[in-house]
Image (cartoon, rainbow, N blue to C red; front, side):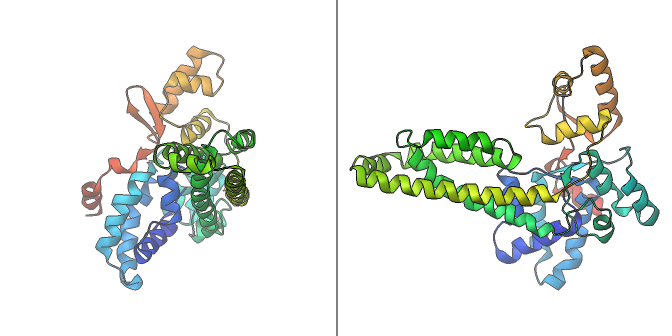
Length: 320
């Protein structure tokens, strides 16, 4: 979950460096899915306008990067009518401007909340050292580079397949790992098409070349697994909140991590609802009652609206 402060800091940093941030790269690669309460979508451009002068960067460049690179990657969730939590009720009594962030955090807990607002941090739901998230993204990005060359070597004839298989099983147990495995498969496919023949020629030169290549393979895989373990440690430490037990909470949690929008029938199965008809009725009530749930195509639902759906022109009109 992403709040205004870290997002604006990230956008400004990307413009200053002239390259995408680890956060943006992680979302682009599908390693993480960013969610934000609907007020953040409108709030970020206003804060960027205020911070542009102090940061000595062009607001137009900041705004363009926000709408073109970040917004399409973030699911924006309308938090109207969501179940309240103890933290959201406490915050509402002091300053309700950030209540939506806590409502959304409570809906899909446990979740990593990247925020720096004092009220949100004091709730205990936000990760205090949110910049540590960059360690996760950098680790995966570095691992991706290692795996590219490792995948080339793995394509030379199945050597190391058993070890790779064990690694895949362990990696697939975590969301970060799933992304890493996907990147590995992509690298392997690219390897077979572009560089496979040259490396296969090296492989055929003899035992010395093979030993050298497999040593390099082991180094790359070991380095990546070590980076991944450290990254997973940071990620697990950052997760906050207790999962809700209501149907609304359970539906939101399933949709939040789903690979694609789901039908009610698929949700009934995912939630292990034994009475199909009653389950379908319950889901119909829940899905249509809260605007957080969006019907995207036909009978398929997802949590939140893809940010790109709002569009740059709509954003400028609403900021008025």
